[in-house]
Image (cartoon, rainbow, N blue to C red; front, side, top):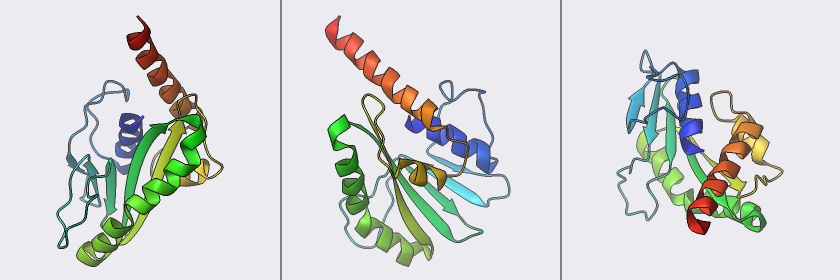
Length: 158
């Protein structure tokens, strides 16, 4: 699901795509859109001035033109823990966002993208996903999560 989000973000920001479908796409750790307006970090640890325990979110989108930064963390959780996991992700990166605001001089926002193993989403999920650049269909993200769950079950049970 994270690769799917990354692919759609790259498509929207004008970064060069090597494949036509997200499942064929191989993510690079640092990419810049044409013109250098947007920098996308994929699974990169960020150096900070202070020692902070959580400095490696799944995706970081830094918009140099607008002076904004989005910290996106993705998880597939048990259906009962979706809301709890969202709150956990926001708290997890609170210190990191404060440090990034001081270091990079940008407005920073944490966006948790949490889907349950059977496709369950929270009431605020659509709001979070709408803040991310790109065309992200909720049904497609849910389908990806469910297919991932099915694949895990197939491996374990067979």
